Amino acid sequence: MKLMKRWRAQGGYREALVIGLPLVVSMISNTVMTFTDRIFLGNYSLEALGASLPANVMAFLFLSFFMGVSEYVNVFIAQYTGACRPADVGRALWVGIWFCVPAGLLLASLAFLAEPLFSLGGHPESIRRLEVIYFQILTVGSLPSLLGLCLSNFFAGRGLTKPVMLISLGSIFINIPLDYCLINGIGPFPEMGIAGAGLATVIGFIAPLIVYILLIFTRKNEVLFKVRSAWRFDRALFARFLHFGLPGGVQFFLDMFAISFFVFIVGRFGPVELAATSAVFSIYNLAFLPTIGLHVAASIMAGQAMGDRNPDRAAFCTHSVLHLALAYMGVMAVVFWLLPEPLLNLFRARGAAGVNFDAVLKMGEVLMRYSAVFTLLDAVAIIYMGGLKGAGDTRFIMFVMGTSSIVCLVIPLMIINWLGIVSIHGPWLFLLVYVVILAATFAFRFTKGPWRRIDLLGRESLK
Image (cartoon, rainbow, N blue to C red; front, side, top):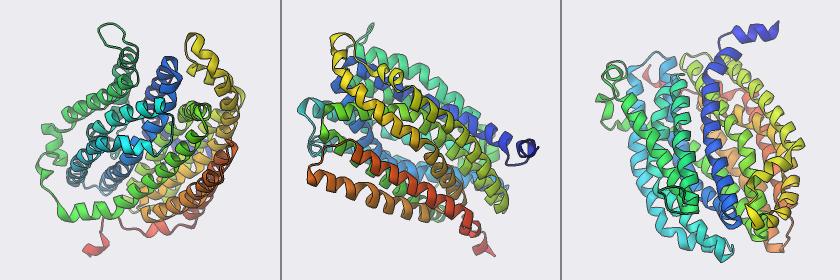
């Protein structure tokens, strides 16, 4: 009876699924593209598979700060929608665009730093060379990636997540065939290996961006949301956007820095450890990234409720999303625990090269069990963080993520590297402790409730 009541209630399961399911599908589509990309590279060569994770993680590390900031356009649009102020939606969107353009150009310039950057990793020359190529291509494609994310918030922040889903699904039909052809040299395409994978990814960023531009900047949306006339730089709103958005960017960056450091330390153990970690991370994304879709749904629903000055509804809808996330992650935990071998074998190279994969498979099965333990803890941390973000409690999130990543991952991994300890269990145990602390801290913060008093839109200052 309580389940049925929560299903029908405002902020209940039905509303959470209406908003969250398209975002989950969107994230799954992104996961599928990443997953198949790694499979194609694993089938191409073990070196390409090993190089893809450090290069991708490093490119995403630099992108993560700007993504974390630009993503906060979502919360502003959600709160303006909840406050029944549609004319301000265009202002919020253009604030994000003004942020993303110079950010994307800055990220593209990082391609010149690829050689010295990956020399610090200490990976074998055959892998380092591929890392540099992949990283350079991904960083050049940062601008369309950032702008596409920013423009998607025009729909997502208003709770209209189906367009985001459809555009993401459409990009699959561009990215995956192009990825396979450019890596292996199928048809009229040259065999480009890991460079082909990077180029297909960038094209996969550009296509959705073009669609978003065509859908958003219409005459109808101009009348309702001022999407054209609000293009002028709004200094006051931009400052407020940075006040709440910058902590989100710092938090995301610190989290990705810790994961990047984790990957580079594991890479020093050897090519088997790096390839196994790369394969397991790719598989774990099947659980993690869809939950990020629910995280965004929690921030949208909580943001709209807070825009309507209803913190009780914000708490209610966040818990509705949490229940759905725990159900999904519970299923994935069982799959990871019981079926590691068939999942890992998807990354086995063709022909005689596949024999070298046996050691990767053996180690990967152990790491998949770690991933199974992570899943439910990650669900708690991710969803509560989404609720806190939707309310504007970004500074607390930044502090917790920054402190935990340094204390639980960076410092212990530096000690392991300094002592010369070569065991895959050490880094993964520290990663588990990191997730436990995040889950416990965010759950306590959300339950305690200081986020209920945050005035993101600055309405109290206008009184």
